[in-house]
Length: 565
Ligand code: ATP
Ligand code: MG
Image (tube, rainbow, N blue to C red):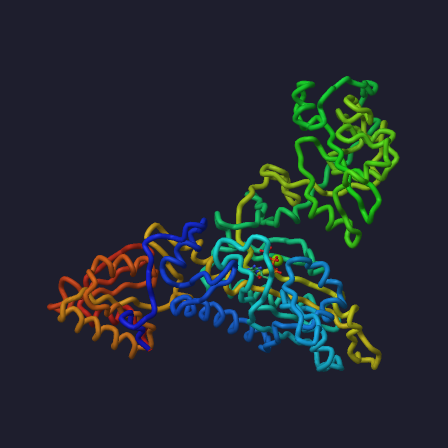
């Protein structure tokens, strides 16, 4: 079909929406691909729907190529299906909840592990029914706190979610590998610049997990990348192990108590004493399942509460509140030190035995210097909990890490038996005994991928789609005069006949300048213009990405564009 712009519902905009911050948000709205419907909700207009469908097609083809079977489950789900795994609570405010006319509770699915587990439990009873991979491309709902950046983070969005079911760990590993390879093919075909990085599993649970990240300034994820080896990980997943220290190996002066009035913060303390923040030991108080616990990190470091919670899961971790302090006179807010402290002490591995610190003296307005780990206090458990910084050592080779921003476009998990345990999903094994099924789950942000691609490929003039996802293969422009229109029509018909997808700018009474500007903004990979030399049947071919142009007789231009059969 030739898509005629004279009839296409398309209104390009000169100005971006006032609240748009990212290039993809601005351009997808300006070029008429999407339109905001309400906060975090987007309407896909004709051009946008084509790109979205192209992404979905590539995803579907590659999922089918690894044996995935497509299904479609409801998005509206009885709440009790989520209650069984505790995720209704875990997801908290992220979950859209509603009630039907009979008062029964429902949620709009944010992801579907529970429902798939129950579906397959119902359908598969024997090891002969497995391995099995099911997938769907479906609308998901998450009541995101900050739905922003256009379709990059919607409250309603399209996701491809897949689930694998195996009877043993080797099977799960094989299913995971297949998905990983399919994802690499998908993101290559879509035209992404992407990295596969180690990730933490978060609310999903389970063990191994990797993220597919598209480096982009607009990204909300930060990943660490080693310039020397192939290590790459989400900053939340970077691990740090200090060289083992020895408290007795170094001679240290005795502990010295210092008068440090009004220095409850590390900055104030470091300035008062004239020492770097990295020489001080900061002790954060948290509750772990209600029990007050101290976490020690170097003063110039931040505690990553997400990492901490991950280490201590399933225990609940929270910052202490004023009430927690109320009946604990031994805990002096702002002046806590690990020496002589009667609570559990967790610490970053940098607080190694033999290291000496300036830290709180557990008295108001006082600090202690030369407090030595292993001599003056002991660490109950070492945990890697600090926020990673550029230059931190690569866990694999020790080289200083680089930090980059990226958009998460896919995430794969080896869930293991977390969900099959909850739903007691066994199948009959080869030996006639029941075996517990093991699962993987695999997501791709289909709608997010559209914006992420726009983010990575757009230039100053507009969008610039990779071939697989572009709304058309060729954008044919009729400059305006009758002879130009006739030649453009001829070109469009020939390209269409050769199997190409054509966008034809046949809008009457628009200046060529307006048409060219729109064409750049819309971003179809090849522009074919019937312009100045149309009377001689010569057209101009332009590559949207490189800007290269050439004048060619129409038949030659056509033979360049149409693949030989
Ligand atoms: P994020 O950290 O960005 O919130 P997530 O880790 O919660 O994402 P997953 O649960 O792993 O997301 O979902 C699978 C995929 O769905 C993600 O990799 C991402 O591409 C996409 N996705 C998640 N949330 C959204 C959203 N609000 N809007 C658009 N796409 C999303
Ligand atoms: Mg994720």
